[in-house]
Amino acid sequence: MSSVGDAAEFSPPPARPRVGLLGTGPWARRTHAPALAAHAGTEFAGVWGRRPEAAAELAAEYGVKVYDDPDALFADCDVAAFALPPDVQALLAVRAAAAGCGLLLDKPVATTVGDARAVADAAERHGVASVVFLTLRFAEPAAAWVEEQAGRSGWFSASAHWLGAVFPPDGAPSAYADSPWRKAKGGLWDVGPHALSVLIPVLGEVTSVTAARGPSDMVQLALRHTSGAASTAVLSLGAPVAAAGVGLEVRGAEGVFSLPNWTDVPRAYGRALDALLTAVRTGVPDARDARFAARLTEILAQAEAQLPV
Picture 1 (tube, rainbow, N blue to C red):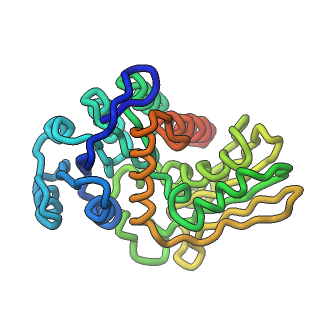
Picture 2: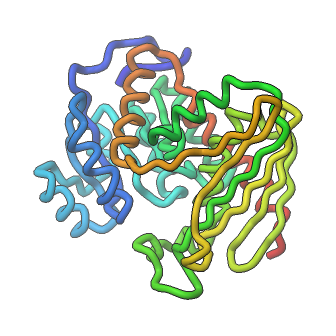
């Protein structure tokens, strides 16, 4: 894989880079695998999973190789695409970077600051490109809206809510409910990266964060930004079904602007892969890379430390 940064010399990518997928859960099946199979500029090369039978089933569905060893996948591929729990992802991403693979990561990249920084450090040390799939930064029309708002100034405030019904008190759990890390870490870590991934490029870097606990797993964040603006984010995976939803609004001297709806998640994943390939080709790190993801982990860890046990 071609390099970015100062750690290795730049070299052009292969004509059709080979992409290996690590992970076999609902997110991998619904988003990662279909997007990789449909991507015209790369070759979907194979699958590794912690459950060999699930990996074999997913690989057979797409006619690709099944791997019983992640390091073998890294050796065969130019890009490692991750659909794993964050702290499993972090450890394997460091190994993938050492093998020379570009990193197409999921959020959060890790749930500890040390592990998140280790991924970013490894990508930089080994000169590989990285991109983190933050849905709102790649799905249209949301991604274009973020870029438009980032070009404005005079911001005063913003409010975000991401209330998921993954573990609702009044209905059937979602397809993502069988996820130990989501049960343990809640909405702060699962959907918090989405909110921060919009608030930071629009309002500026976070300079302070205050966190409070609400009902269920709800966490409310109060943030200040380098622009001087203040923002709030309410995050949960345990909302009642009728209360679930996503919204974000920014207010400033130029008016009030609301995040539009988005639906094209598999295509958005393809755009994230495009962004990674662009970073490979140009040698210029993407703004949504592992270092940005490490910063998100730092903010979330700071918030978590303020919450009652």
